[in-house]
Image (cartoon, rainbow, N blue to C red; front, side, top):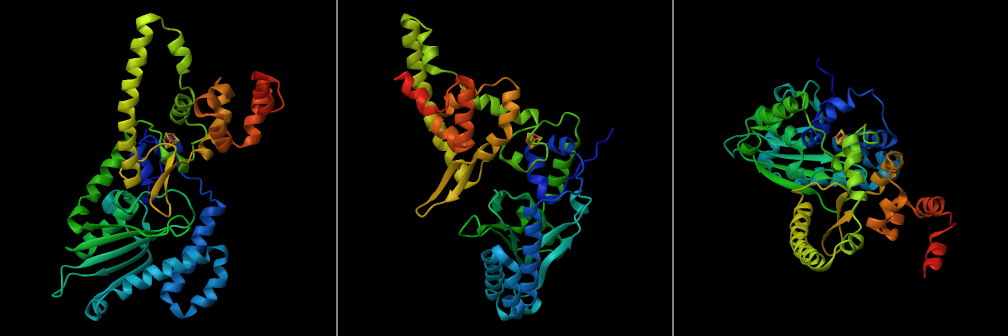
Length: 364
Ligand code: SF4
């Protein structure tokens, strides 16, 4: 029996990474969130301000706490237009909050393209596209180079207008990133998207579609109950006690284990650096980690506070005790992730002590 699932451009990244997510989530019940409503409202304001620049001052009043967002989107749209020559402007096609038919990609529902300027192929050039996606809020957005949603929209425009030049895709998320995250594709890189998307949809419909946890779980409707996600969380939490493991060995066995461990640390250190670079470049999504832009350079950071909060009750119900969670990651980190009160409260419950300080004082 075919199970109904919701597949649309904005959740394709999750469907691709976790093919079971479509079936596990099921059809959307139409519920929304305050963040989504804020985003819709701000998108409307951005749209109106691009179409009618003279009305921007009046529109700013409606933007409330999203003023920086709407201004950044307007600036970006203006700068795309300003970069065109007079001849290109004469033939340019501008899309603003446009509904695109995506049946060619195997998608039942249309997608809404935020902003694009298409300069069609003509005697002055092979045609090119500027495509921009507006994102309000701080939530993680896949980088332009790997962003399936924007790549689908780019591909749809390439096919519709027979573009042979470049497609510049930019993701504008001013509340999270100072600069536009962009990538320039050659149009030929996007013509294969319909087949790629149909392939993802087929994998999601497969009876054996696997559930694969990762940072994409953040937006999944079943994230609080999903077994696959819980197993990963439990594995992270249950790192073995290394001192106990070494203590349990004797003589040569102990020395050999120590030497092996040192080798493993060296190898893992190298692997860690490589993985870190891949996360920073956007090539890899890593569960529990996100990236940010510092003054000097890009950095990566544990972003699993919300993850831990959501999973903690489930983890405890599966028999994991608080020390199983706190010992491997450290008290300070646990407090950062879970909040001081929760950690101290759970320790107090476990050890019958009112606070961590008193537990430590008694040990010394
Ligand atoms: S929570 Fe994560 S692993 Fe589970 S179904 Fe959703 S996306 Fe997949």
